[in-house]
Length: 186
Image (tube, rainbow, N blue to C red; front, side):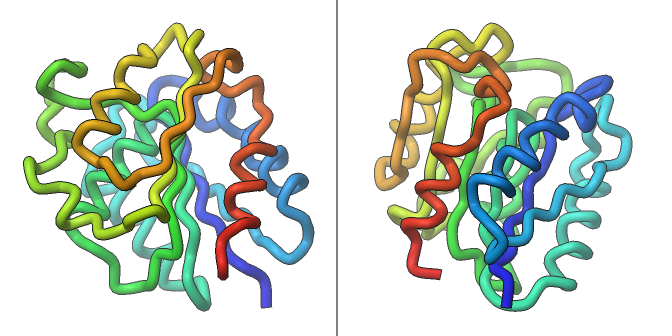
């Protein structure tokens, strides 16, 4: 049986197409024993939480066994918020968050940012321990790399990786994420 990976895109005009190159990179690096799911999210310009939540939960219901969640940019923020509020009816083996914007506090404060802001006790609700991975690139021109430090502070058990290069899209090479996924006892 294939191991399921759910990859959630970022937001903004053209985000699905831009992030689309991440899916084959991850799939190829993982190999045939893994199946990467990469659905187009509705209304990517403004990423409505409830609509994205509906798509995520529909997709997860179709997958057997524990699932690995991978999110990029706003998609990473979404997965973190969803897991901190909802938990999961389906077992989540691990979460891999790439270039994840930090909302509120010393992070971003755009209109409507509260929809993705984590509760103060997020670490308690996430209960992911060392199965939570945070990645960022020092030269990310879209989400500043200091957002990674903000998450590391509130999620002290997470594995944190700051890469020197790769920009916001990690040069469309997620082989390093695949290596961490393969190290998991799935």
